[in-house]
Image (cartoon, rainbow, N blue to C red):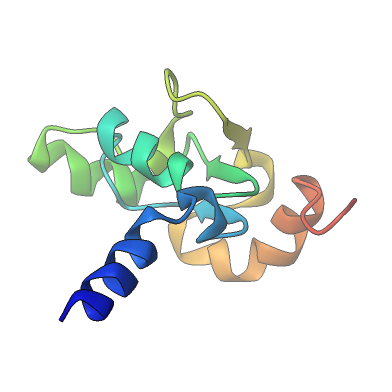
Amino acid sequence: NKDNEQRRRFEYDREPASLVGDVIFIGLPRAIDKKVLTSCRRVTGGRLVNCYTTNDWLLSLMFVARGGTACGTKPIKDVPGVENYDVTHLVESHTKYGDAIPNILQYIRFSEP
């Protein structure tokens, strides 16, 4: 049916940046992949923030076997529009992220005008 086809096309032709407001990666166990992260940036209308710690040994060891580098252990470079915050001073270990979230959100100034 032509009406359904036009409706479906409209759904996918919308401005991608209107799909997601803000995105905050906190200790993200995902390999740094420029293509994937560029796609994330494209559909994020607000901030795209990467919070990482340089002392997250658990996350680092998980990715040594895979041969990659986790977003949660280093800044994301070469992807325009990504904000990087080193939160090492706020997080003792990977298992302590939950306790540190209020301090992390304050540090990155989340929800401030």
